[in-house]
Structures are given as structure tokens and as C-alpha cells.
Image 1 (spheres, rainbow, N blue to C red):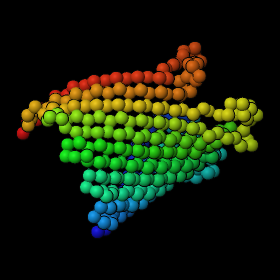
Image 2 (cartoon, helix red, strand yellow; image 1 turned 135 degrees about the vertical axis):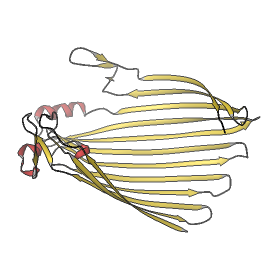
Image 3 (tube, helix red, strand yellow; image 1 turned 180 degrees about the vertical axis):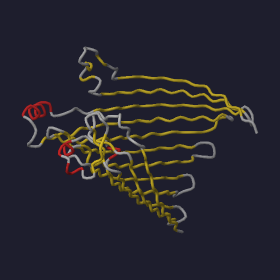
Image 4 (cartoon, rainbow, N blue to C red; image 1 turned 60 degrees about the vertical axis):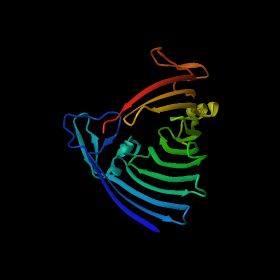
Amino acid sequence: ETKGTLTVTFNQVDRRTFTETSATSGITALRLKTEETGVKAELRRRMSETLSGAVALEGSRRDGSHWLRDVGGRGVTEEADPGSVLFFQTGVFPVNLADRRREKVRLSADWQPTEPLSLQAGAEFGRDRYDAPSAYGVRRSDMNQIDLDVTYAVNDDWKVNGFASRGSQELDQVRPGGAFLALDNTATMFGVGVTGTIKKVEVGGNLSWLQDRSKYGQTLDATADAGSAALLAATGGLPDIAFRQTQLRLFAKYEIDKQSAVRMDVGHQRSRWTDWAWNYNGVPFVYSDGTTLNYKTLQNVSFMGVTYTRRWQ
């Protein structure tokens, strides 16, 4: 058995008229209108009584109206040929307004080799390419995501489950001063859980672990100044930002009658965070006026909640 679907989408954002008394700041130009057209094709097939899968391909393209540049605080003017404007070549253009091409592919599978055991897997890969009049800004973004879920029914009352996922996103951009910056963010998560019934009381819990790490790959071209080159050589660039969290959650639910139930949830989170934007090696971030910004790298949070539910039929 095979099923296929084809979807066409169109999205338009109209920001109306830019008034003559308005002015822009911090950016080179704006757009009043952006339009995006997308196509998605998906094919689903049942290969056997226990295995089914799907593949989806998706693509979209975004462009927009002419760019509007500021006229010395006296409103804006349209630029039909942005390549002819000299300062556009080194300008700053908002990513959400730039031309963009997006391609994505997703694969998924559902397998039940035995009656009590089931597995679901999915993988998604995508890429965005940006095109703006400037030589600076975001040029490309890649994303990858892989997920796996497993469920096993021990008996009619008890089930155990486990999951694992890993996702990454890479952002490449060119910055002034001959700097190239590649942000590589990777998130890994896995966990196990159990649910069951003890004398009409539904109980369960899960234990999960998460790690999110951002790496900054920095390079310079020949146009970079000597100070920037010396600083990068001495420091090696920006350090990684890492976030780790371990979480335990437990619950118990009791059905008082057909219309009401009470539930209790308890949990504990243990988090560790290293972020040079807040502090580095125990030294807090300091603003130009002397104000400091600090945080605890290791944090523990416990919580408990009781919920009463009443249904009317």
C-alpha cells in the first residue's frame, strides 16, 4: 500500500507603507514585502505487516520587493538595482528579509517486530542559502536531526520506553574585518521511562539527560587587521558554550470516580552551564559602567505539584 501527497504553499508578508517621517537605524536597508513559495512531496508505504515508512522532500524560495535605504533620516528610497549602491556591498541586511532558498528531506520508519515491542525512527536534513546585496551576513545554515523511540509492553499493566535524539545546526556568516564565523550547535538527549498501575493507581517516571554545546569556528582572511589576527592567535577564538541537564520526574494518578482524578508530580533537575557571555573561569561579565553580570554554573531545582481534575459530561 502506497500513498502520496503534494502540497504547495504561499506566504506573503506585507509591512505596509514606510512613512516619510520614519528613519532606520543599525541596518542598511529594509523591505516592505516578502513572498515565499514552497512545495512538499511525501510518499508513505507499508512494506509489510510490521514495517512502514515515509520520505518527504520539501523546497521553498523567498524573495521580496525592492530594498529601501535610509535617506539621512528623511524617509527612505527604493533601490531597484542594489548592486549599483556602493555602501550596500558592505551593509547589514536583516536575515528575515533576505532572499532565501530552503531544501529539506525527512525519512521516517515505524517497526513492530513483536506485539509488545515497537520502534519509531526519524531523520531530517535541511539547508538554507541566503542571498543579500552585501558581502557580509549569514550565507548558509544547515540542520540535521535524528530521533529514535522504543516502547516495550512488559504486560497489560506495565510499559517501559526509551528515546534518544541528536540534532545539529550550523550557521556560516561573514563579518566585517575579514572575519568568518561558523556557529556549530549540537544537542544530544536520551532518556528512559516506565508507566504502570498499582492497585488502581497509575504511576510512572522518567530519567533524561541533555547536553547542548555551541562551538564557534573563527578564521580571518587577508584583509583583517594585525590586531585581530594577533588576538585570534593568542586566544584561539571564542570558547565553547555548554549546557547539561539531568532530570528525574515521577508521578502518581488516582481516579476518584469517572468524573474526577487527583495527580501528584515530583521532580528534580540538575543543570550545569558554561557561558562566556555571563562569566568566564569564575570572572563575571563587566559592563562599561562597572555593573557585573553573574550566574551560578551549577543549579539544582526540585519541584512538587498536585492537580485535581473534574470532568462534566
